[in-house]
Each structure stands twice: as C-alpha cells, then as structure tokens.
Image (cartoon, rainbow, N blue to C red):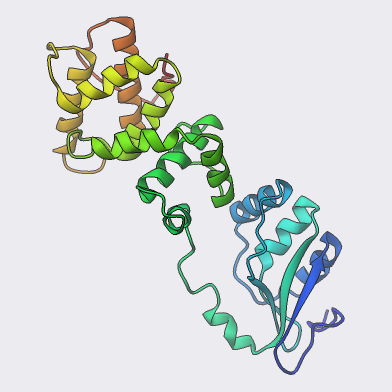
Length: 278
C-alpha cells in the first residue's frame, strides 16, 4: 500500500491541526507506520490505562507525519487509543521532512520526580520512588520489577489518594545517614507498618535510626547489623532482599521474638515466599 493513501495527510509544508482521534482513525493512521522504531508494549498498555481512567493530559505533544504521509511520531499513543477505545483530541502536524524523525523524542522523558519538583514538593526524588513502590506493592508486585510499571499519572493519582506517603518519605530522608538501607525501602516499610500499628512503627524506626537500648539479637539490632554488613560487601544487593529483611525484622519485633539471622532465599528448588508485614 502506498504511504500516502490516508486522506488529508500529505502536505508540502508543515501544517498544524487539532483532531478528534477516534480508535478507527488511529487504526487508519497506523497503516502509515512504515518507518518507525519497534513498538514498546509496556508503553502502549500504560498509555491505554491512563486514557481509560481519564488521566491522559492534552499537553501539546503532536502526532507527526512526513510530507508523503508516513507516520513519524505517535505510534504508541495511536496504539493506546485503539486498545482503550477512547477518542482524544490530538495536535497533528503534517508536511514534515522525513529526516526530522531522527531528532524526535531526543529529550529526557519527564518523571514523577520532575512533576513533584515543579509542584514545589519537598524530597521529590525520594517521594516519587517510595510512591511508585507503594503502588506496586498494592498491585501485588513485591519486587522492584514488573511487566506493567506504573505510569506517571497512576503514580501521582496514588499519591493524591495516600498523602501520608509524604510523612513516610520524611522519615526515610531523616534516617538516610543513620541507616544503611535505601530510602525507598525505609519509606515503603514505614508506610506499610504505620497502617498496622502507628505506635509500634514509631518505636521501630526510632530504634532503627539510633540503635539505642537494643539488646543483642533484638530484631532491630539484628537488622541494623545485617544492613551495615551488606553495605560493606562488594556488589549490589537487590532492593527486594533488603525489603524482605526489614519486614522479617518487623514481624519478629511484633511477635516479641529474638532474631539471630536474617536470610531471604527467593530462588532455588524451594523458593521462599515474600514476607508480609503483620
């Protein structure tokens, strides 16, 4: 099929139009997608979820076509419109030189931390990371990986629903120099534990930071010791292992038990289930 068969896309010079892009129109335009990078399914799924939830922002980013009608930029958005079944207003630019595609999407993608910084929110980087992990945890993703990572819109919406994450982030930042654990782990566990028992959480994290009045093999004593041992070992320990250690220490503290060793073995013949705070 020739690349200029979609009516109205061929132009000799750049023109700018706002168009109501329906799923049917998006399918037509995708037939002109003959000169583009490989589609990233995770991006399409994320965009589609935002569109279905009404969280897609009309931010001026354009769907772009070359002079001959070739789709240059916007394939992921168009695939998401088809997948979601949602009609959206889009800025459409036609009549571009095909070589301009080499300069498209050349900037760094804005992150949740960027959005929070623009809002003037303190500890934006740490808050973004902790909110993302909290949302993943609620979705049943306990390790910092997943086939469906949260979108910026989903993460910001979750933060709006759980403003207490800002308090957990403040605690994590305040303990950054005292505890050999990532802020994302400290912030996430503080948020999880606070929903179970606020007084126990306050005591647990106060002692985690100070180490004061802890007997040998008290769960917090063992956690502090293990965290510092790991921080001095070569290589990088996965975040989910450290997260499991904190939860195990918390559970032992809540049970009133001593804790001599901290281990987590998610692989092998008998993989250990990820611990849940109680």
